[in-house]
Length: 419
Ligand SMILES: Nc1ncnc2c1ncn2[C@@H]1O[C@H](COP(=O)(O)OP(=O)(O)OP(=O)(O)O)[C@@H](O)[C@H]1O
Ligand SMILES: [Mg+2]
Image 1 (tube, helix red, strand yellow):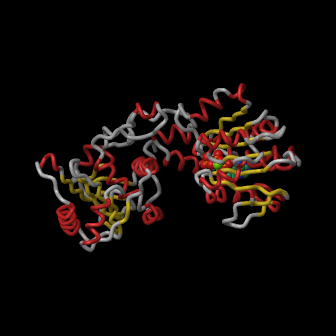
Image 2 (image 1 turned 120 degrees about the vertical axis):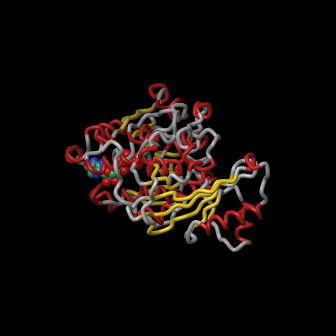
Image 3 (image 1 turned 30 degrees about the vertical axis):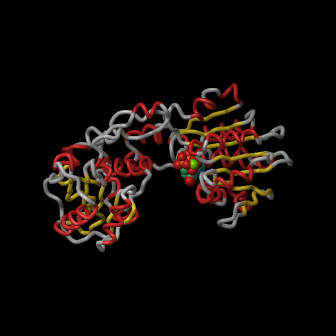
């Protein structure tokens, strides 16, 4: 292969990492910002490593699921723009758990699939590539390492940073020399193809914790305010522009805790607005409501605030309430239970000035400023909000995140807070 020609298209860091990865004692790890060129550099190293891999032993690609492997790894490998003639040497049928790369069978293994793990247990591995390494269970990673039994066997991996206590950082990156790891830290500058406008877009979308980890590439603790971009002057409005499309109504369910519902619409200015909220706090009212009562009051509130939106999104843990709504003739959708992506969606909407809250929703407005990361959990490696005064905030997460596919293409261009 003509490395000189590649030197003109790869950034200096990419080129150094490809050369360095081939010389690593055992593990090569590309960590850092999103879109920083880690995957492209590591895949080039992988292709060269496939040619050089010991004959004995399997070649495997590990990702979270087969679908993420196909999207993140196989698709770029088959791009002739990126890999020239080598792209024609990558054969794969969608859904198949193997690919043929440069004539060699490569096993594609979703680490979240327990049966898939069985495919490598007991085998010998000559070369492994791991996508999104922090998301692979540590037990799986350790098992993979124990399979690298032939001389010259290597493991190449990419990842975005996680918390500072993550095992990949403490046991591998920080102990690199001892455990045979070479590691490169990538930033947006290391991708030679990024346009300024795209970098600005990334900067607008990644805020707070996500800015620090996914743009600055820091292995940082989840601490402080989750919605540190919350700005009452910017985000609270007394007049909501005309709604052109209702998106959702959502409910965070509580019996001893408050029940909090809200209504989200897309307005004529291309922004999402929380236009109404309804809260029932059994502690304030000295009486708990039954599901029958909640269903009746929720529907009455919904119908009093406008036409029914296409989606009614309910707290994923409120199974009995959903059943009651269904019996009362209202179909609902289960709220997306993944907390972090939901927080990121709301944070990004706020930061880009594309989500506003009507001043007539004081209960949720009161919750925004104090919403914080749980530092005790963060120290133990878990990113989670402190569980206090978060009922309206859970509601808006369901209302906005679960319905992304309907509003995503209708929003105005992001506005940068600093612009
Ligand atoms: N040397 C290069 N020449 C041309 N395009 C490149 C180069 N490096 C990266 N790119 C382009 O930039 C995009 C992002 O790069 P890449 O996928 O490697 O980023 P990443 O660091 O793996 O990001 P993520 O953390 O989001 O997975 C690629 O899809 C590719 O199109
Ligand atoms: Mg990548």
